[in-house]
Image 1 (spheres, rainbow, N blue to C red):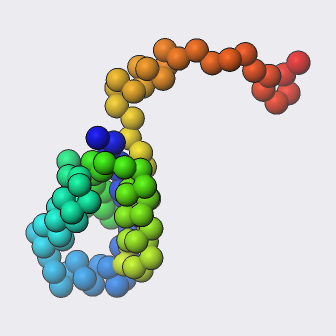
Image 2 (tube, one colour; image 1 turned 135 degrees about the horizontal axis):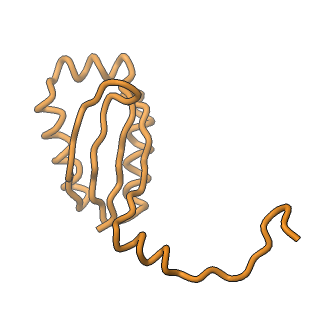
Image 3 (cartoon, rainbow, N blue to C red; image 1 turned 30 degrees about the vertical axis):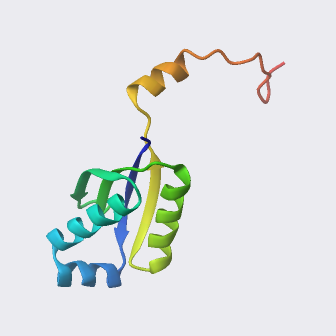
Length: 108
């Protein structure tokens, strides 16, 4: 099942909701949403620094991941970033793949 990292920052409205609902309620809701989309949550963390939050979510389709990201972004409570994750096996397959001969910009 494809894995995605969803990370980002709360807006003022989102931070207010987190303070009101608490961390456990947010985590339980995220698990419920992932399950309803046919997926699961592998990791779920709050952070400080460049981002407020990150989770690793397993979803059955890229379309579902994109729709989820758009829906959360449109809510106005979170400014997020969806990042597809690459497994060791996928990276091995990619690095073992032959590319066709190509001329890159500026090459003769």
